[in-house]
Image (cartoon, rainbow, N blue to C red; front, side, top):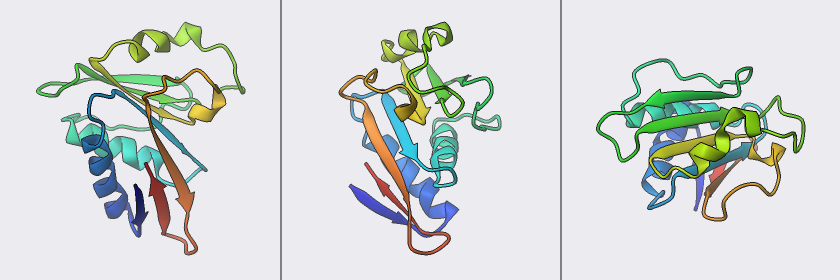
Length: 140
């Protein structure tokens, strides 16, 4: 699906649509340049799942876990690989455990930093700049 966002409000609405498109999947990969809406998307997903604390990109800590209540998942695992060197070993994060746990919704920003390591059924969401400042194309 290809969606156009004209505002942060649109991006948040599209994020909720992405969540509904998951089906039985539990991994969402968010790929796109800086400033295209990846973190806003995670914030909207977290809000939709009932997370009440502030959700920011875990750029320096790489991964942040939010417990969930009354959701299909036990936890939201937000991963930001921006500071990872390409194909750097990420085993120390424990990410593999969450990727194998269907009760964990894993949302990864910058998945291209570790190529070839993602389950084939992960939902890939790609963000692109539009031809005007606030326009984004979101493809999933």
